[in-house]
Length: 334
Image (cartoon, rainbow, N blue to C red; front, top):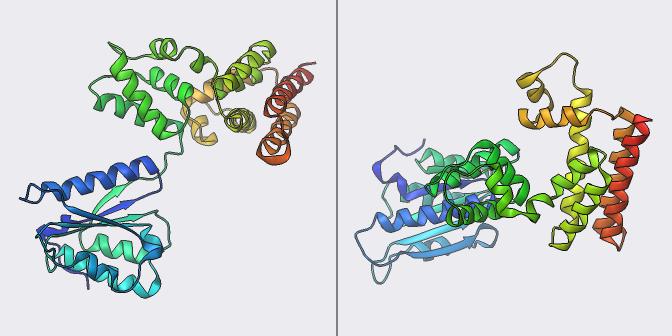
């Protein structure tokens, strides 16, 4: 039977997920909570341990009485990897910290989510651990929401078009997006929108992998190659350009094969894309055939394989892929 919830149970936090930036922020927030909950002015004694390296008796040593009476904070990383023979020991620690049996100790469990090590996580939550979810943001709409929240937290506002423009300019990496939001908030004034974002990023916004992919899918050879060369010149990773090409073509395949008659939100749900993306893809589909899309996807897959070890010239592989995409589109239109 689980220990009854008490007021001290905020001394155990469970950080759940594998989005690194969010996990780091959650751990830092938990440690600040430990600092705020003590009357002492000194910083708590923080110890980080990887669960896979945990040995018997180590927890007792870390959480034992402090010589100077300082609060101790244990950050247990990769909690899903706690050795089976130590699960009971970790569970008991969470229980005793939660109900106050162990004083001046604060525990932060960092768990990647999933089934592995779930019993320990469920036990900690049952004891009243504060849950902090940090799952990966896998959808464009989630990243757009993240951008808007970051900008709002800085005291500014950004509309949806502006957030999408920033996403296309910077890419999907959450750290880079967070840094970009901070830069925009500091370096600009007024309401942020797509025009301001594009002006701020100039060449970078125009040369992102997604823009190169859009120009290739639309059959604009000159613009696609110009954007590709500029993207590579400013340091855009070749694999990101190939990934953008692949994503764009797969979106064509999804929307093109969706049941007829679906519109708006229904079509977006069917293909798993945000409505604004569906509208763009539907416009790009004009001039494409199913065989053309398949041919283009194979060409991009070949380029991706070359970039990941099968070839030596990334620029040539990507230029060849861009031209192959446009040739597949032109063949369909002929």
